[in-house]
Image 1 (cartoon, rainbow, N blue to C red):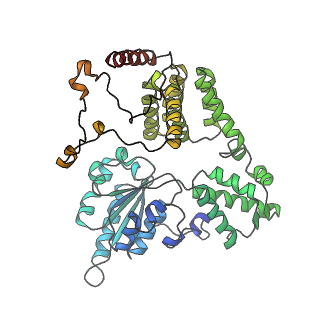
Image 2: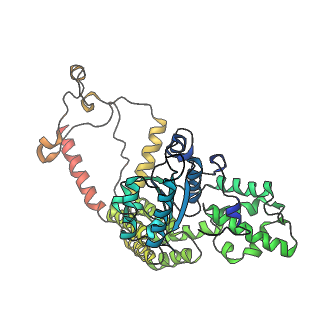
Image 3: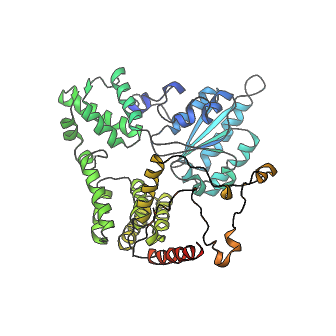
Amino acid sequence: MATPASHPPLAERLRPKNLGEVVGQQHLLGEGLPLRIAFESGEPHSCILWGPPGVGKTTIARLMANSFDAHFITISAVLGGVKEIREAVEQASIWQGQGDGHGKRTIVFVDEVHRFNKSQQDAFLPHVESGLFTFIGATTENPSFEVNSALLSRAVVYVLQPLTDADLKKIVLRVQQERVLPAIETIADEAVERLVAYADGDARRLLNTLESLSVAARAEKISDVSDAWLLKVLGERLRRYDKGGEQFYDTISALHKSVRGSDPDAALYWFMRMLDGGAEPKYMARRLIRMASEDIGLADPRALRMALDAAEVYQRLGSPEGELALAQCVVYLAVAPKSNAVYKAFNEAKAFIKKDGTRPVPMHLRNAPTKLMKELDYGKNYRYAHDEEDGFAAGENYLPEGMAAPGFYRPVNRGLEIRIADKLNELKAKNNQKN
């Protein structure tokens, strides 16, 4: 067991002591929602808390132990191994035999459980099954890939989300109201915005940064934190990549436009600029997926699969190995044929639906699962395309009655969409012949 620090870090001092103090994760902790129900049930169950750093995984595990009046054993998968697992089993066995004949519950919390190998993870199985202790694992990696299926099947997976800007601002406000950093009296709104952007959803990162600021403020005898002073003290790590700032969005814009402009060298340059500046690779992966849909679309449908695969590779390997897959995707997207036809069709259809009335579904397109619906002519005269010549019901209408063909989707003369346009023209000719 670790000896408590004489002066614990700010993140530890501000750790919530009850559910009411928890910031964020309301999709799990709100009234009537999964984790709240688990707390209120009085019966702990094994679970895996999956989410990015600094979002409350350890806090929730500790609150569970408090709520269920259970002994809490922490094992770090980075530092521990089979020896620590055996010690936890021995302690749980001792506590199980104490008390009024029913013993006392034990919760074994394994931080970064994905770092345990298969045999180490297997060591928990018999004790979880026997009920000797409740297992709670915390991981930043996808449990589907990193946790043994046997252990995974015995635990509920709860997905935690990055804290929102509003959540992080609540934490800054609490720091100021409770005067836990007496050297700092006020923080300018612009400085708060920059701190929140830098924290990027991570409460621990935010609190550690605030603690660093407090040390600097005490040394310089400054009590009011301005944005300019913040930049001066924290320097390059804030200046180079302000997540919410103009430079960040300028650079992602340059990357996107380089991909759209089919310049792989420029795209790689801006991609590496962002990584070097501290941009989160997972964010970059999301943007690449967007580019594949928005700027390439059906001109090369493989681009979307490439982007999804690159995101998955990064999810599994992390940095720096996974970044190569993202770079490969950047180059592929840049050299792929371009089309925004689906993107434009999507936006046109969206705008049309907003202004158009709710048109009824034609009778021949309605499903008729009951006798009454068949008697009401639901599905009557529907032509099953697979039974028609060439698998196409020429002349059939699939739009609401009285609605002219809107022509949302207009393929471009590039890549696969050349063939798609030929196919659509062929089908249009067949429809015209039938009509």
